[in-house]
Image 1: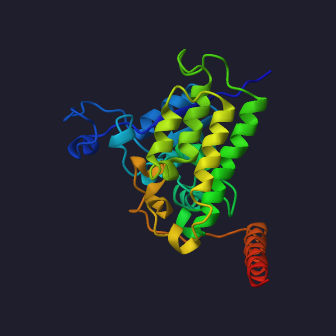
Image 2: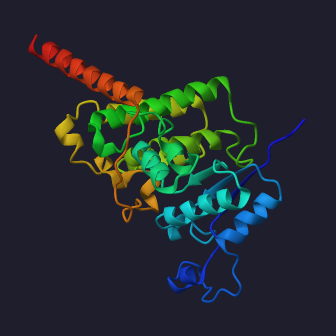
Image 3: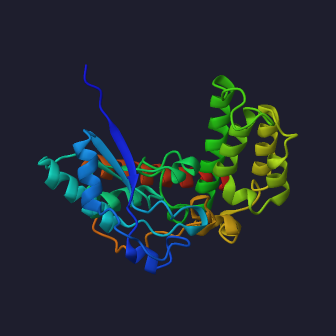
Length: 288
């Protein structure tokens, strides 16, 4: 029985990275491995699928920059040329903040697929048309309900499928896993409700019930705020997301024309019609 082997890599550091100050204290690279050399090495080892993160290993957390999709495209071309397989599977990783970025990255890199990590921790529906969009592309109420909904759903799953005992340390036990996910789902709102952020970070909060109480409290603080007022809050801006706490978007990359499939266009039309119906229902209720 054949077993597939995959590999995930970052870009090899170059002298250009060193000159730009992207390699920490390293100012000179001696004999760096090139992209072509790295891809050939992996293919010669029998790797069946490669995921390429468009940053070097030095670019993370506060030192992270825009993902280099041009270099990812070079990896794709190099692997396919060397393997002789025009469809050799390469996945692109890095710079994927929303559903639009998925389409743009595929167009730019010619990769077989796209991987996301940090963004999915905040917006698990990132790969779903209409659910993984930037905050500014919908209403502030929609974004609020989306994030609260993710937190609610996660607590349901954590109740049925609790994290392994002792995960993320002995102190706090497996609830630290729950705590970590809630911080990401609710990041933009906890930043403007510091008392709730501190409460969630307190080791005394260590049960699902307490987490639901916190969620109820957070929801109640926004219940009576209308759309116009919500848009004035910091939580409305795209820069308030968990993903952007250390990052900026791939703004250097120009938007490319994105071709949506017929099914995707139908889905977007359905979502628009559904929103229009909901707005009409709200207006009719208010007039009554």
